[in-house]
Amino acid sequence: MNPKFFSLPVEKQQAILNAAYRVFSQNSYKNSPMSEIAAEAGISKSLLFHYFHNKKELYLYLWDNCAETTIEYLTRYGCYEQTELFESMERGMRAKMEIIRLYPNMGSFTIRAFYEKDPEICAAIQESYHRYFNLKADKVRLNLDPSQFVPGLDIDMMYREMYWASEGYLWEAVQQGKFDIDQMEKVFNQMLTFWKSVYLRRE
Image (cartoon, rainbow, N blue to C red):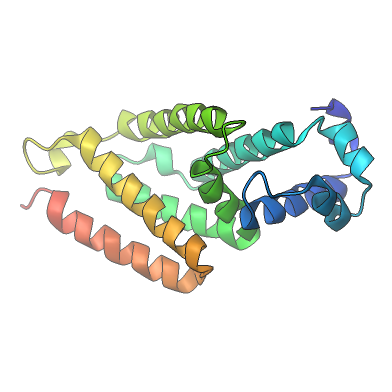
């Protein structure tokens, strides 16, 4: 991308990114026109291509920005400092709910991008996803006290199972167009309560 993009006022940068998040979150990669993004952002299509040389470059920038924003908020909420997994997850839930409140289209874009099958960007998205997933997982596992879980538990598998279930719930919400933050928070709390009853060691 053209580094001159970062010379724009922050408000104009946000207008361009928010327009792109909305368009890409509501359409497949192939059916997301750059002209619509430019129009919504209040700039010409040629200027949009001046900052992002093609659609793939813009799309992958948005994806990386999502991952970096998520890690920033998880760090801000102290998720990586916890020794108790479910305390970390509860903090993570609050962080992600804040991201959704501030950037509603970012959340839906992330989920749609993960399931995008277009060969032009699919491999890059999956490679980036696994890199960021492993980074987040490693950060969480770093401080975990294994004695809090039932004996013999495969902690890596438990972590992945909970992560996949959470992502699956978010995907369902995107598919149905239902981003009721209060309801989502309620469901996540129910899931956490269930996982605690299954995985935590009983005194």
